Structures are given as structure tokens and as C-alpha cells.
Image 1 (spheres, rainbow over the protein chains, first blue to last red):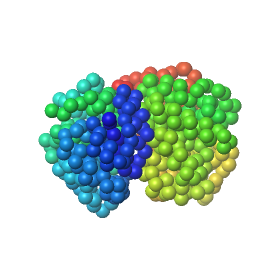
Image 2 (cartoon, helix red, strand yellow):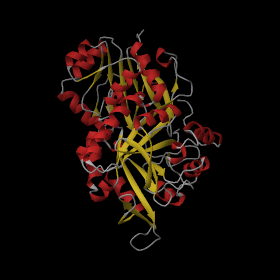
Image 3 (cartoon, each protein chain N blue to C red):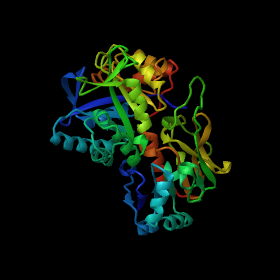
Image 4 (cartoon, rainbow over the protein chains, first blue to last red):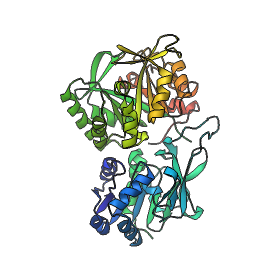
Amino acid sequence: MIVIVDYEAGNLTSVAAATAAAGFPARISSDPADIATAERLIFPGVGAAASAMHHLRRLGLVEPLRAAVASGKPFLGICLGFQILFEHSDEDGGVDLLGLFRGRVVRFPDGMTEAGQGPLKVPHMGWSRVEFTRSMPLRDGLPADSEFYFVHSYYPEPEPSAVCATAVYGRRFAAGVACGNVIGFQFHPEKSGRPGLQLLRNFCTWTPA
Amino acid sequence: MLSKRIIPCLDVRDGRTTKGVRFKDNVDIGDPVEMARYYYDQGADELVFYDITASAEGRGIMIEVVRQVARCIFIPFSVGGGLNSLEAMRAVLLAGAEKVSLNSGAVANPDLLRQGAAAFGRQCVVLGMDVLRVGASAAIPSGYEVVTHGGRRRTGLDALRWARQAEALGAGEICLNSIDADGTCEGYELTLTRLIATGVGIPVIASGGAGRPEHLAEVLTTAAADAALVASMTHFGGVTIGQLKGYLHERGVKVRMTW
């Protein structure tokens, strides 16, 4: 069973619809027992980091999530669910996160520019090309120039060796991180058309090395 | 780098897609779920639905449309039209929309923008603006006035001032519709679009007037729009989203070319 973790950080309908369309129906749940028995986990989320951490603690999900990651089952963080895997976010005056990936989450500065364009607006909202920086099963079947849908004002600064995908918005930033059985993406595969569905399909069949 | 977005707009009345000129003379052009899928397959970057139903019964039909659309397209879409409470916004988002668009509801109660941003995040909250060219005056210094009810009711609000106020309250994006240009197919209102797009720090979607591919090129470059809404020119089969993107790509406008 694939479980989409519900911790009141946004609506998960679209994630469930996308995995179903990719051929892998999933259960939306906030029950620690489901997280423990799941074959693989999807950890989405939109909104603010502080509020999300508050809900994770209130629902008693912090330890079950840590245990799930430690168990080696495939784990996919999306957007805020990706950021929460890091140690600390500058959002809301500073928030401690789960600390499963090393690094902190910082905000795009105001006034960024890009060739012929500027000042860039924050949030970074819309479609940007994602460059996968290593070969891995999750990119199987993705056209090289695939773009994905982003909506975020913050981005993580991981250890360089953990980065598996990058995108550019005023600067090059980590759009994806992979480490063992845990992978996370800043963009929304569930809103990224066919490449997004392909990525979800790849995750749902992935066996971590 | 961010791609400029091409966004088909579907007006829905009683569960059917319609299209009018300057908010009048609506004709039935099909099932909204089928049309959503048609545009998804063509490479649309996002979709906008406006519920132009007046009745409470129609509202229920719209929620069902949203639910079905969310199951068959995997790009963002927003829903607007008549939303005037947090509960109405929540219903649309829970049905699977990515964003809600507030128009008259925000004019009547600007605090709705703040409430929506606090409850769902500002990325969910789009301000829809219908704007009429009226000439500059002391009350309307930009020369553009916000109107509601399909352009029939003037609000006394200056368009630029309202856009900035909405941004400060919590709007995460603006969908800017020119009543003067809407449905004419003679091109977007470039002066208005540039005024708002460069006057706020949130993305602006230009709406109203698209008739030829060069209209999109000019609004996305010289008028600084982040996205362009299309309706008549693609609804009636004259041109596909893919063709529009090919045209823009050839002219150096960054658009998403693989879908």
C-alpha cells in the first residue's frame, strides 16, 4: 500500500488523483499505523513550515515518519514535504525541521534578476526546466527538457553530494535531493503533466539500492 | 528560468462551457471536463474556470465539474465566479482546484483576500480584476477603473491602487481582464497590462482580446505579463495551444515545449 501522509498542510486530492492516473492508487492517511505498514510513503505539503511542524507534532507523526525513513522504505517528499526533511527553515522567524537531510531552507531574496528579466517575482511560481544531475531510476522516461510546476518562496541548501536535480530562478537551486531510500522534490509532480506522472510512476516502482 | 504560461479560460454556466463577447451573447461550446482534457493534451500550462452560473443549483454542478476535472488533468487550475466566502473557497479547493479567483467578492469584502491567504496560503488566492478604461481623473489617477458584474457596475476603485492593495492583503496572483478588449480578438490591452504587471510584485495574467499569436508575443514581452489567457482564438478551433507555443518559442519567448 502507498500512503500519502495527511498532516493538514494543504489539499492532497491532486496528489492522490495523480498517483491513481499513474497507475498506483494510494491511501490518504494521518494514522501512524498506516505509516508504519505502508510499502512506500508520499509526503506532500503546501503552506508554512511552522504550522506544518505544529500539525506533525500534534498528530504524533514525527516519530512514525522517522521510523519509516529508517526502515528503508521508499519515501518521497514534495514541496513543503521536501523542505521539512531538512534541519532548519528561515521561514516564520526560524523553524526547526525533521533533520533527515542536512542543510537549511532559505528564502529567495527580493530583487533577483535573470538575463533580460527582472526584478524576478517571489514566489517562484510556474514551470521551470529541471536538470537531473545524476543518473537514477526516477528519471527513466523523462524527456531531457522536461519542465515541472513550482510554487515556492523558500528553497533548501543541501550538501552538494545529496543534490539530484537543479533548477534556475535567479540562481541555481536544489530542486531535488536523494539519499538512500529518501527522495524529495521542490516542484509538484502531481501538477506537472505527463513528466510529473512519469516521475510518480517511477517512484511507485522504485526499489532503493 | 520561468516559462511564460498560456492559460485557456473556460466560462461555465450550468455545467456547460460558453463564450460570449463583452460578457454578452453566450454560445454553448461544450462539456468543460472534455475541454479541460482537450487543452491539457494540447500543452496548456494551466486552466481557468469561471462559473458564470447565477443559481445555487448551478454552484453544486460547478463543484462536481471541478471534482471531475481534478481527476483527469494534472496541471494547476483555478476556479472563480461568485466566490464570496471562505466556505465557498474551501469547497472549490477541496474539490481539487489549485487556486481560487476572487473578483466581485473581494471588492465587496477585501478582507476575504487576507482570510483566504491565511487559511490556504497566498499561492491559492488569485485576484480577478475586470477593468474599464475611463480616462485619468482625481479619483482614478491611472485612468483605469475596476468594474464588477460583468462590467455593468463601476466601483470607483483605481485599478493600480486596488491591485496593490490586494497584493498587500494576500493575493498571490492577479488575473487582469480588460473589459474594453474582452472578446474582440483585436489584442490585449497592453498599456493596462504593463501598468499592473510592473506595478505589483506578484504574477499577472493578461486577459481579454487575444485573437492572433502576435497578441500573445506582445503582451508577454513588451507588456511584461507573466501569463496570457486565451479563449475565443483557441475555443473555436482556429489555433491550438501547441501552435501558439511554437510561434512564441520561435520568437524567443520562453514557453514550455514538452508535455
